[in-house]
Image (cartoon, rainbow, N blue to C red; front, top):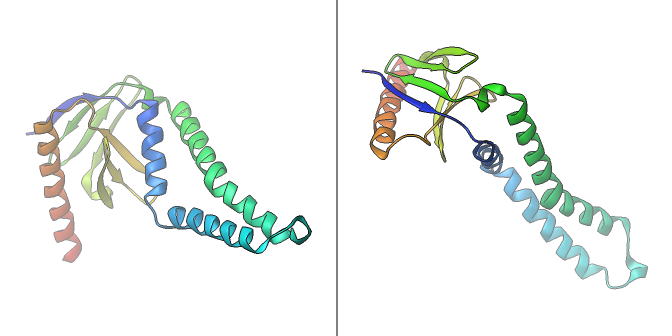
Length: 169
């Protein structure tokens, strides 16, 4: 029996999700640490203004970029994406069953079958369904009770088992 519920995505939740997905990878975490380490080493070797060189300046710029500019650009890009996708501003009625997902907002209606998705993931306040490495369908958990979230997890676990069995054949 399909599960029906209504959900919406706030701007803050969307921005938090996008930044969390970016920083969930190892490189965005390792690079600022290496930059700060390079800054400390450069400060140790530069003892006076006469020894100031371009390497020290470059290390300072890279460190500032990774600590301030990258998060600022990510925030700006996520905010711009949210503002430009009007479907994210709508309250959406979801119907989720073992055969697929049906989503209907004020200006659109979409249906998805699970065989089109390559990855199912639960991140923060969302369930994410990836059709490729960049495109994803967001299902908010905001309006669901803990029992309903457990029921959705059960449905999605069942779908992952079916997809795995099909892949192994």
